[in-house]
Amino acid sequence: MKRLLLCSFVLSSLLLAGVARADVAPPNLEPCVGKAIGALCLTDTAVPGTCQNTTCQRLDYAHWDRDASSSPPSASYPCVLCTAIIKDVPPAEGCSCTIGKGALVKHAAPWLMAGAFALLFRFSRRSR
Image (cartoon, rainbow, N blue to C red):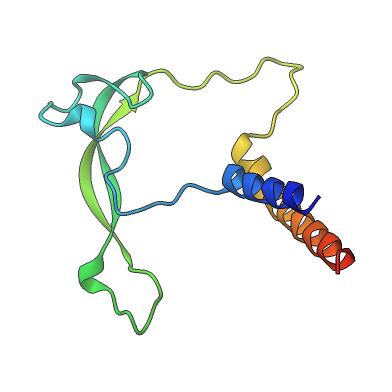
């Protein structure tokens, strides 16, 4: 039983873990390298788009006061990104809205983790 609880805890932790954001280039930057503004491109998800001027963010390690904050500040810089031409289609009238995976995970993850810990401690006390 303990092994089953431990395996379910580890599996739920891996499935519900968020994606870490490191100091990496923003998505859709690569398709516009060397292209002019307005040129056709494909986004990272293979959606047709055009190269557009925009502002990107990056972590600014040069101006980071490690004593004042735990994370470096962000800095804005001009960049050219591939912006999708096709916009999302709104749902038809009478359709019910759905909650995205990200929102569901944000709300359910803490409860699932708390439940896994509670079960782990409950069954570990009984075996002693």
